[in-house]
Structure formats: C-alpha cells, structure tokens
Length: 304
Length: 250
Figure (spheres, rainbow over the protein chains, first blue to last red):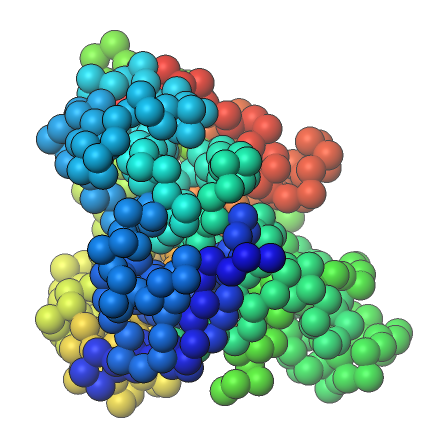
C-alpha cells in the first residue's frame, strides 16, 4: 500500500505548552483516517503541520513523499484543507466562493465538477446566496466543495461535523465514503467518539500524545475487561450504589446505562443483592461490547 | 409515582411573519427529570427554548414554566431557571470567585448566602485552590463543571443546558453527567438541547422536533424499540430528515 502521510517523532511547543509530543503514524492511500480526541488534544496543530501551515519543532512530516517544511509550495497544490472554523468568504455568494477557489488553484469549476457534483448539487439551488447566510449543514457542504475543487490527492478536514445536526452529519460521512472512488485520501478529526466507527483507521489523541492508532474494531476488541451494562431508572443512585459495591473496578455513566467492570470479570448474585439493599430494585445487568469510548477511558485511566 | 409538572406547554404556536417556527407544540416536563430536546438545524428548538426561558412570547398557546406564565410573567420565569451553553457561560477575565459573586448578585442573592454557598461549592468541586484564578487559565473541563455549578447556584427549578458536553474528553464528560444526575436527583429539572445523539442517550425522556413540530417524545429506550433502532441517532435520522427547502434553511 502506498503511503500518503508519514509522521516521524513530531513535536511542537507553543511557549511552555507542549502541543504535540512524539507523534508517529502513517496514513495509506485511499484511507479515511480519523483523529479522535477532545478539544485541546492537539488535533488542529497536527493538521496545520500536515497542511504545511506550521513547521514541527521536532521530527519530520512527509506528505506524498515530500517534506512539509521544505516542499510546501508543491504540496499545497495537492492538499485540500477544510479548517475547523468556517473560513469561506461570507460576503461572497456560494458560486463566487467556489469560482474563487478554483481560480486560485488554476483550474475551473467545470473541469472538476464531477468530483464535487454529489456534494455541490445539494447547495446549487442556492448558488446566488451569500455564504454567510447558509445553514450549518450547507456551509459545511460548500466548504467541502471548495476544498475539493482543485482535485487534491489528500483531503484534510478539521472537525467538519462539529455543531452540525445528526442528519447532516450522516450525509457528510456518506459523501466522504463516495470520495474514495476518486482515490482521495482523507484525514479527518472529531471530538465525537461515535464517528470513529466510520473511519478505516483511527488514532486516539489526548494531551498532545497519540495513545493508539488502529482499525476501530481492533480498538474496541483491545478493551481488556468484561464490560457490564447496568440499567435502572434512578441513575444517580444506581451509579453511587455501583461505586460502593466492593468488587467494582470502574463504573461510568454511559447513555442509558452504567458501564461497569468487576474484579475477576464475573458478577454473581451478590451484585444484585447489593443493589437491592441500596434501594435499587429490578436493575438489569447485561454483558456489553466495549465501544471506542470505553477503550479511550481505559487508556486515559492507565496514563494518569 | 406522581411527579410534579415544572414545564407545561399546550398548543404552543410561534410565528415570524408567515413562517411557523413552532407549530402547535404540547408537552410536559417533570420535576427532577432529565429531558432531551432534539431536532435538526432549523427545526424550531431555539425558538421554543427562548419562549421557555422567558425571552420570547408565544404567538398563541399556553406555556407555564416553574409555575409562571410565559406570556404574562416572563421575568419571574427568568429568576427561576438557570442556563448554560457550551460557547459562553463565564467571564474569562474574572476569577472563579468573582464569577460566582456576579451571578449570585444578578439573581438577587444576599451576600451572606453567596459566601455560604460559594464555600460549599468550591469544596464540593475540590476547587478551593482555583478560587482566585482567572477563568481563562482553567482547563476546559474545569470551566464546564464550574459553569454548570454556577448555572444552578441560585437553586433554580429548572436548568437549561445547550450542548453541555461538546468537545470535552470522555472522563470529564462522565464527571459532568454525574453532576447532572446528582442535580436531577435533588429535584432540579435538567432540560438539554443537543445535536449529539449520544448525549441524548443519557436523558430520561427525549423529544425530537422536525419542521416546527414534535414528531417523537418518549424514553430513549422506548423510541429505540419503536423504531427498531440500535441508537437514538438511528431513530433521529429516520424521523428528523428535514426537507431541503428554502424554509428549512432560514
């Protein structure tokens, strides 16, 4: 498989703040590679290095075989970048924005229309509208169209789905999948764990460090414990009671249940008895498959 | 179990010119409940939220919040609710203590009560050492916990949260939801609006809005069962797909 990005020991400091430390990873051609981590984890800094907008203090970033620090002129022609903050011209229309980006990259909308038609067709009926007057989902589609109009080999998307509703988010991921047919490699970041499953591979990033990079399914399977989901209507009391159970190792609220790991991985009648004694009747306890977020919690805990 | 109703909405309509933003909404929210208020962009959530918090008047229909009428007594509603959103909640250039004092003062609390509750709050959050730090110097997770604590500092009947846990790490997020559970357990109603369906999974009940109407309202579990879906996200996508019309973009 051809390598599109290689990060070798990337480090970056801003004053006293270590934004990135010892980052190693590779992204292969045609992959959708996700960076998952909270605000402030270093995702944007890393993306700015990949897109040649920032040089690392340590290590080397190679994109499409070129060094991001030295060969930035050549690289910028091959990279499409959609920054986290909406950065199109709000006082230009949809159409004007798209034409502008095409012109800057020395191409025309017509030449690469096939690449964006799926996405752009959603907003084409509003092509005369000012970009600043579009809804969140529409802005996102326009920004993606503009990032693609020069037919980049690598598309870098910084939190494209933040603040966008679930319907538009689902549509967005469908569009990314379709872009694969055009041999575009995609690097995308998100603070939302549930989006990890939509990537071919994901890297979990926290406090400037890359904790793990693998296929989402592998990451889930790496959860080392048996996981139980406990449900009862009185969630706070349930959580407190579970924390007091002597064999509990971890207990975290997780949607409509509490995810619990128990010493020796087995629960017996004593757990239910304990819950009943704590005033919680009819709790349901089922074994559950660990998700990406469970694994993230496990990794974070081991680091503290 | 009979639960007290703290929000009661009957046939709420809100129009802007000929555009119907809220089309005949009726629902109730109970004391101590964690209620998720969902909908796509432009579905009418913000409009409804502004009415529920006394910032906007209904065109017609009856809305009662914490026992007060949204049309006649919006000022009394404001005193009895708390509000926190992810984007703005605290003054970055004031210290933790200054922020608490400011909000306590705005809600008309006495100095004595403010000091008393502040000591309690800081110790409960293990925040004593941060008391004199500027908000801007705190990590995001601490800011959000503090913002939530301040939103309920005047002991409102209801607290409105707008995407409360967006962007925080999973551990902080869990701690945040524990605070929400604890708050609900004390009898304060927690009304959550969010785009993130995994946040919705934490709620006792959720409503889903589409084009100005409530198209579903039940527990997450019941909705998943009804739509034979594995997650609230699937339910949402199935029933809240907005039409791409001029209107839905406004």
